[in-house]
Image 1 (tube, rainbow, N blue to C red):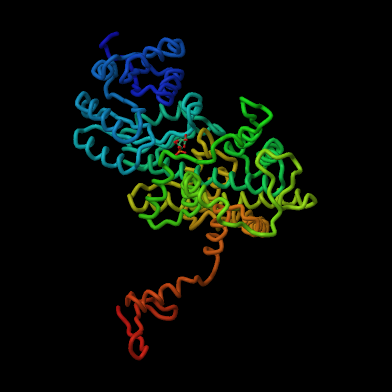
Image 2 (cartoon, rainbow, N blue to C red):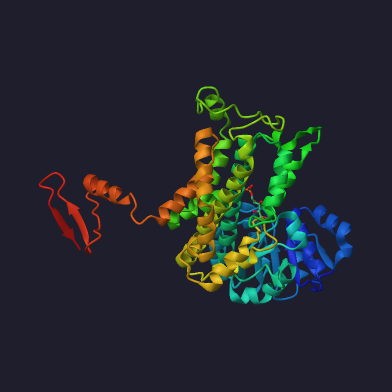
Length: 497
Ligand code: 6PG
């Protein structure tokens, strides 16, 4: 071990993501300092993968900092929240003005903003960097959403572009904006990931109970979808999960032995909480978060089973794991068109979820003055990340054509695609309601679509009610100003402002 600074970049926090990111960086030829709170992980990394590049292992934070060339660049890869603050508190006193501290975890963007201000006062550049792609992405090429100052990005950007995955020769990494912008965009990415997964799960549920097909046969359906507009990592892995057998009894589908309660680490919930503050209706993400919460309400679900009746005349759905052809609520003769309807409903609902996510990015960018380019976000999500999908290229094109696009849904391509699937989408929502298979993602996406396209909304009545009980006033369609009716008197109208 030496104190002569040779390392171009350092990674502290060598759990799976940190370890793989450090290996990725070292494999790209960077001399990489590595450090972990417990030294055994550092030794294990260098012992197992030392041949992949030049690692400089450090036993202590002091040694770690001393091994880095100035200005130092350190990537923190520890759990979001208190563990990140603890590492910053340990490292910051050892750093000098001009050094760059990077948080590569799933931090809340508000924490990143707070940390950036505190470290800026000490002359340290703090960059919150969103990294997506799981363990494999971290090693082989993630999608990277770097926030932070231009100064930090000038040093960091080329390294991140090197280790990120490439799509059509373009690295999936670009400067998102200052302070918390990178972590904000990563948070919305995760929110969209929640919505996408919820919609896929609803499609599976409807097909399984509508057709009575086995998960293995449904895997084929998802595989075929993966060669069309729906082509994406999540559709691809859906087929893999549906095809898998229970390792302890392989003829039984794995999906039937997994407890049906979805967990969450919190980024989807943060997205919805933030959207509420920004006033952005991300209903698809909210439905996904709530659907996970409902799935986890085990005691309430147990209490309701057998007590709350479902629709009477629907044929009994095949038991999970039932034989192919056990039957569902769709006639066998209509199977093919039902599959096509569900595909169209999934695509249309997905477009809505992404449209809402991009609206939220724009709203956050305006609120915090980040200047985020939505098209650039679509570009860096085309590869490496969990929501990577063919249609992100269409989103990139839409923003390229019209950077101030009011909604993805009004882009000619997406408007046309959703219109083409509209009738199928409505049929699927009706069938879900009639059969008692909940599809909150599909139906709320359709409600959003209808809410967006209608000339007059029911909110006029809401405004009237607010004026009646609280004198909250209303605006008129035919002249400017705020108005109030004398509800307890002669019903005359008075004008304010
Ligand atoms: C990614 C993922 C990653 C992770 C999330 C989701 O982009 O690589 O989004 O961040 O899978 O933590 O986790 P939960 O579903 O547990 O909230």
